[in-house]
Amino acid sequence: EDLPGGGLGGFSEFFRAFFGDLGDLGGLGRTARGRPTGEAWDRAPRSEGVAGAPPGQIGTITLTLEEVLHGARRRVQLPDGRRVEVQVPPGVRAGQTIRLPGAAGGQDVYLTVEVAPHQVFERTGDDLVVEVPVPFVDAALGGQVEVPTLEGRMMVTVPPGTQSGQRLRLRGQGLPRAQGGRGDLYARVKVVVPTTLSARERTLLEELRRLQREPSRKG
Image (tube, rainbow, N blue to C red):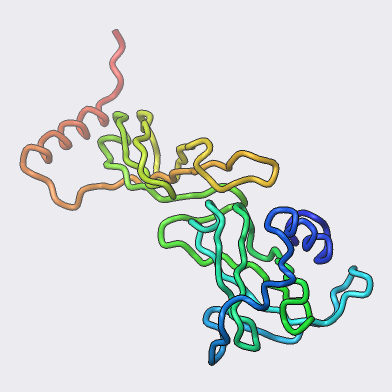
């Protein structure tokens, strides 16, 4: 999937509309030694569906979820050692392609976007999912729990009777959408049962178990 504008050639026009003509970026920065860090390069075949597309260089650019949220300005080392500055718009997805026309000795450079796995969040399209531990008492009686987001932490209400696996929706706390706005963040509940109990806690839980096992009384 390419960023808006159709094929690779269309994207170059889209990219220039946002960030200016990148054809001169090959002259930015000094020549560096060694292979690019975090980018792998191969000779790109002719692009299918793009009439007259010349061969070029193809590589990857790896972004964090935070960079997907805010957009990123990155310096990418080309196969010949030169570095160019690339500005990536918010909301890109893995597999989308950035074209830098003529950046490698007159040949086009294609950067395929990859998004690094996050230690806390899972991405589903423009939405995010995060697992949130909830004490079993709060799950049963209701309460509030602190939920991490990409921009901080929020307090969220847990309804009474919440079960493990249930999801709490935080609207607009996901990633940017192509059509505007943002996706949602879903807090996936993991009910936590204590492994140790005080004598008083054990007494109360045993009383609760006794009450739950009693047959219903009419009256």
